[in-house]
Length: 76
Image 1 (tube, rainbow, N blue to C red):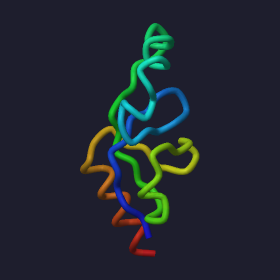
Image 2 (image 1 turned 90 degrees about the vertical axis):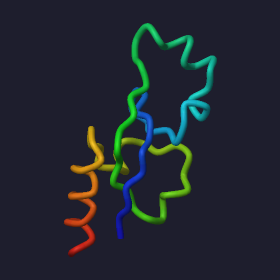
Image 3 (image 1 turned 120 degrees about the vertical axis):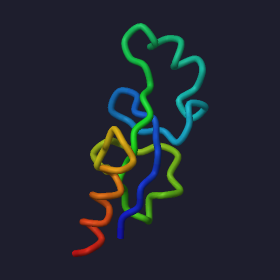
């Protein structure tokens, strides 16, 4: 089963919150990348994870597309 979780994409990782990335890391790398809120379709078993690699999620720019994919995946 899949679920949708909003997470911040920063380089190749997804974070539950900006605090998870860390202020120091954000300030050191802000000239290269800015965290962006994405809607991720992930396994229900991973919903409590604070950090995930992008390889473990389908990433969407909006909630509607994420829920659509989640429903499709859960229908199998």
